[in-house]
Structure formats: C-alpha cells, structure tokens
Image 1 (tube, rainbow, N blue to C red):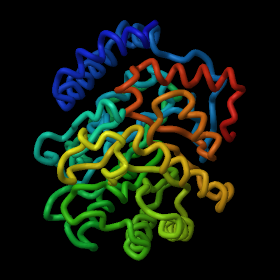
Image 2 (cartoon, rainbow, N blue to C red; image 1 turned 90 degrees about the horizontal axis):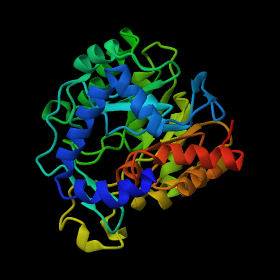
Image 3 (spheres, one colour; image 1 turned 30 degrees about the vertical axis):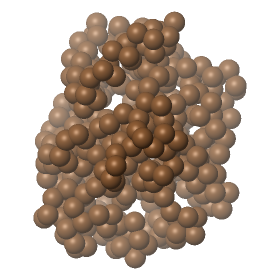
Length: 355
C-alpha cells in the first residue's frame, strides 16, 4: 500500500519539481527526522526491516542488511542518524574531496522517466573532507550501521595532473584515518565530468594512486569504485592492479556514460553532460560482477551497484556474485519502501547471497 501511494500520488507531484531541489528538500527532512527519537521511530515504523536474519560479516565489518545507500546522495554526511531506520545496513558518504566543491553548473540532475534513469552531473559537489569529518564525528547512528566514505579528487584546477590528483586523494584518506572516521573507504576512480577527466581509470595511473594510498596505515577495508563502460580485458587489467596493491574489493560500478543505450534517446541531453544512473546501468554492472566473480573467485569483496530498481534486480546481482548491494535511483523511482521489500524477498527466498 505504501508503495502504491508513493508511485500513484507522491511521485507524480515530486517529479513536477526540479530534481536537485527535491533532493535537497529530502536531505533536509531526513536530517531533521534523524535528530529526534520520534522522527526515527516514525520512519522505522514505515520503512525498517525487523530482525537480523540477513546480517552479513564482510571484511570484518558486520552489516545488518546487505543494502547500502550508494555515494552521491548523502554527499555531505547528513543522514547517518536516519538511514538505519530505512533498512539500510550501510551508506557511502560523499564522494568527499580534499577541498570543498561547488559542483558543476546547473542543471546537475535530470530525470529520464520512461527510461527509469537519471542524468547525474553533480561534479562532486560537497563541503570538503574536513567539514564532513567534523559532522560525522557528531553523528550518532543506530548501533550496527556501517559508515563508508567515498573519496574522490577535488573538482578544480588545483587537482589537475597525476601527482596533484594523487596528493588530493591522499589528503582526504589521511585525514579520515587520523580522525578514525569511517568503517570502510572507497576510492572513486571513475567519476565523469570533472577537471582533468578520469585520471585514474588506466592501470598505470591507478597503480601509482593506490600504491601511494597504501602508505597510509589503517585497519579499515578499502574498495575501488569501478567504471562500467570498459570491455572485460580493460576492466580485468584494473582488477590486477587492485589485487597487486592489496585492496579488499570493488564497487561495480559507476555511472553509464553511453547515451546511445538509452531506450528513449529523446530524454537524454543533446550533448554529453553527466553519467546515466538507474536502469541503464543494470546489465553492464551485473555482467561485470558475474565475470569478476567467475575469474577471481573469492579474492574480491564485490559491492553491486547500478540499476537496482526492484527486489528481482537485487537478487540478480547477488546471484551474479555480489556480497553487498548499493542503490539510489531505485529508491527515487519506486519509493523508500524498496529496501524493505528487497529484504523481505531475500528472506522469503532463503537469501542466495554469499556469506
């Protein structure tokens, strides 16, 4: 019933407004609700999955449910108090950067309603790692909630170039580990539409970045967020670097940059302006998950991200080899009850997720 009300009544109203403004309003509302016990109780009553039946221990970290909020929604770390009451077992804050980023010129978000996708052109908008650290140190999420931090290079001219870009990542990770903020870290190596492009999606540059970051001593799991617009051979070369440099796993994956795959091309911008989320990521990300698990066995923890709009999409990724899941767009198109529905289906199915 809640899902029907969202799709038939609330979503049509929300989709009449600018998506960036709607996003900002929901973050503000979530922040307020998370500050008060009655707000947390009410959201939990509506959207929380009860019990620990789907609890998973991954890389020494216990996730109450396998579903996480992907990076790109709570980019300033304002929702950690409320997300545990929406069935999320984890979230990735950010991506955070060494310096504050105002983001790309507007519009930064665009809906592709028939395609069930978003055009994302935010340009790593965030308040910078130091301010976000201060906020997260004050957060009081419910016990068992896993806080991940996605790290990217600052979207400005100061970070252009290989060495400057590496030091930008290094500063953010160093500060997070010094302050002991975050249960795991994800290195975002494939964010589109930033100054200098994707400097670290080639094996040579990626190895230099990860080698430098591994000099920072800490005991938290580290993952790399992977591009999905590469053939398997190129993708596998990156996996070999990630294996060599000792990261725990990968998030598969980031936004789809091929507008030609949109089933309704009239919905897409006339020129390339941001990556595509939602349904246009599902097939690519799932196939890369399947190939990674098939070729590498249990070497990597795999977090499946991209195109999870239904419980069936979630199960498909888990059966392909994902250990955990992340989503955003499915929640926007189908409502905040989606995560609870996924967990119910997983419990009913007996959960074929890897333990």
